[in-house]
Length: 232
Image (cartoon, rainbow, N blue to C red; front, side, top):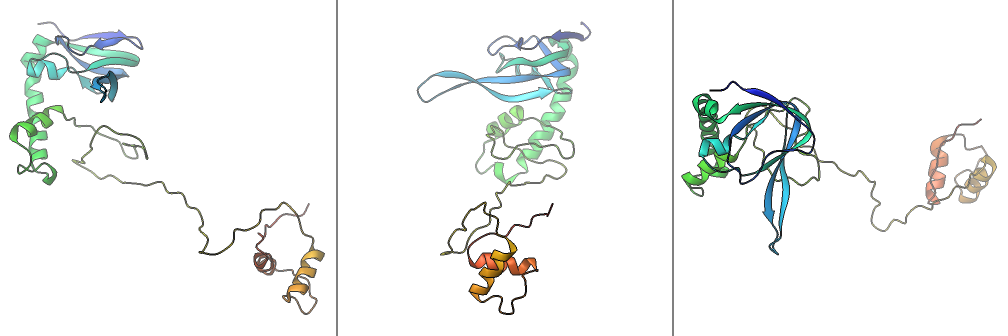
């Protein structure tokens, strides 16, 4: 058996390719990678799409070794990586016990969810789902899925709490029938405001409109906006 080795891979390089025989298992020591899978359009055109981005502390390549199948995805380097490479013989002698424990944990958790009730899901489907799902740990305040973004994964909280925050556009709505206010850059002097107030009957004593709310009420009645400005 060979001890694990460290390899450095530059951006853009392919670490493992879909359909190839699995020879190694990988831990990411630094950097990040894309996990790409082939998909097909309704017209039959085959294209590649990114289904996951893995970074420091994540691992990949175990599925082909555990199930003795060919690679099911292509992994390419997103940014310069340092990878801890575990040979398949070392993996076969040590790692299966670790993954069997994690698989049992995922299987038990999924079976306990109403969404995946045995009334609708067969044991084979639950097992396949357990094999293809991942346990990810997120730090506090980490955004898991951004608002309005497309997402290929379903996330289920196993431990801890998550907040669902919706981004809303807070625009003031006008009551039905109310006319929109007129937009203007014209500045009205105090004398003009006083004349308008006298004409509209809002100032009968001839006293100046010193209060801001009086001016605002006057302009609102004319469907104009009152803006406070600083005198220079």
